[in-house]
Length: 415
Image (tube, rainbow, N blue to C red; front, side, top):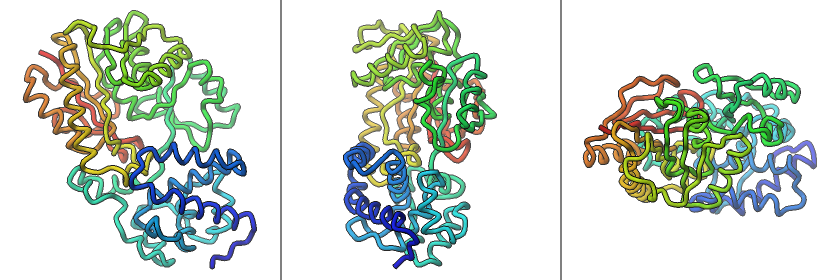
């Protein structure tokens, strides 16, 4: 047995062991796992906010390294439990437990191979196994090599987007709160926020000066050659992160029409737009009511498998299958067929996913262009995040390039 120096540490370890025994078996089937985890944590009145942060981090760590652990149907032995604690991120919520149980272990940084060697030496025999599903190898072979392989095993950072021309207001508040941040060298309006903070409790958030948005998501809109006053359609707007970004770039004379099949998402979009003071966004339940060839640009930020978000949502590594990918690709092709006619001659059609599979990215665009040769790749060079990789019809942003989620974007101009 592990030598646990305090009843508190022993109790926390046993609580997590019990939690994983309950939830671990669902990781391979439940694509709504985060919602169920949150419900389980909030149902237990013993858990305060720090407890929830602790068990959330341990659970997500276990999901990232699931192939190194016993099968979810088997008990989580002491060696595997200690490995999860050691591999978890250094946070205020995790630090006491890490110190109590693995404080004499070496530092946990370095590559996946280095961490695997340390854990194998401590008896975790399964640490020689791959941390990615084998079917993914044909979809994204780069993911099985460093540095992308190492990046996909890391916890994703928190990025925000400034929605103000006075960043000093945000900077002053963050410094008063003791929050550390680093602006992106390539996109200064994108800030990486360090540590464990709740941005939604800040004045900057309440006043609409910031939005939580991954740097890669910001890249999709920032690379577009927009002109003030243009009229755009966001066909799969969701809660509106890119709609807000588009509206800000298009200015007070521009217009963004936003649509999503989920009414609750559009309600959230409207709340965010009001908070940001953006009055140029119009929500529509039916984009088909707009005339053909009526938009300067159409953004199709398509539903996808989410393979580019595996750092943020590690449960998707195990609950996604080739059948899911094929089904999303069919849906994506249908969306492009639906929306391309709304682009005016000379206008832009932007296709984006947070996937790294060629089936959902290059293959979808190549088939679309065969059917619609009047849409050709926009030839302008990328102005932001220039290390994005050229691929058939578009560019791919790998998480290892800028510490982002993974994205694919194709910008096509209608002839």
